Image 1 (cartoon, helix red, strand yellow):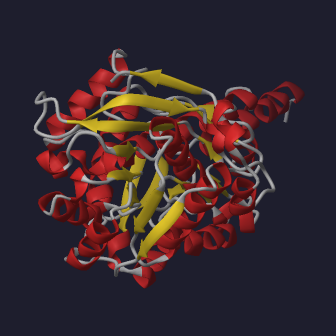
Image 2 (cartoon, rainbow, N blue to C red; image 1 turned 180 degrees about the vertical axis):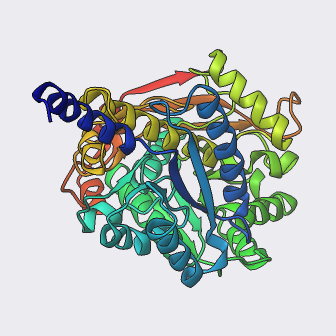
Length: 428
């Protein structure tokens, strides 16, 4: 073979191999509740994912590669979830998995992702224990955890109601209800040690009747009532409390209530504290005038007939992270499609932006996400409560530092911490 021909063939071979490495599609497997009580989170997330993938692909995909998403129903139970997750990661060809909503499922799937060597974005679960108790190579969280979510609620309460004396809690009796109260109570006692806890109630998950708890609370008359309930449990508790007049005598702190505003309608009166599990709100004061934000809100409402809630925002953050990390890895690879190790390397310090403020992945793989807290108001502009007296807290200020255990860290705070946290305030 002539030397010039051999050289030409050798020169062409790497290009051919590189081109062959570019996949026909970037495959994402996403776990979300499509059935059961948590579907009030999961179905909005699925709807959002479909809109986001359609948008990404209409813009040319990621690095010229279209995105495909397949869904797994978390409501099918742990055994089926684990089996389907394994199937998608092994034989289904998923490049990246988004899992999960349930904190219990996250704790199960994180080590499985590590065993399967598949990149996993924890796109919604709240347990702070994932990265405080374990170290992972393949697992990342594209939003905050329970610590900044609860700490933002404590700080907002202390800033807006500094003189309250007593508090009670009504939380679901499982890990989230117990753990979120542990963080909230520890932080509250560290910053306002004179507060008295007058009642702790942990009704069964999925309880249809809170009359016993409401009667006890009416007798106790706490200044503040915390509930980190979510979904149907939160809706039922607020509706029954409103019917019994409890919301007229106590201020409710509801860190997950942003997702229930539309369903609660007129049942949630003005004057109660609402959280958004991040800076998530369909009228986000810093984003609502952005064309891209307005376009997405309109498209989502047209598709579903509903307003966007925090699982929608968390989905947007996961897809923003997906797009950002592949674009970063492609750039670092000279414009060529990256392998998995190059994508993993690009996750270090990754910054991306969904529908809220930018999120950063820090060295322990935990996402740093701002937190929005506000007060409910019935203006009549919508058939449900909206938000006023909005505060957005800097996520880095209220997330336990790398290597710290959240409960231990918040226990070491004091009242001076209130003035150390960066916060932006908005009327509505």
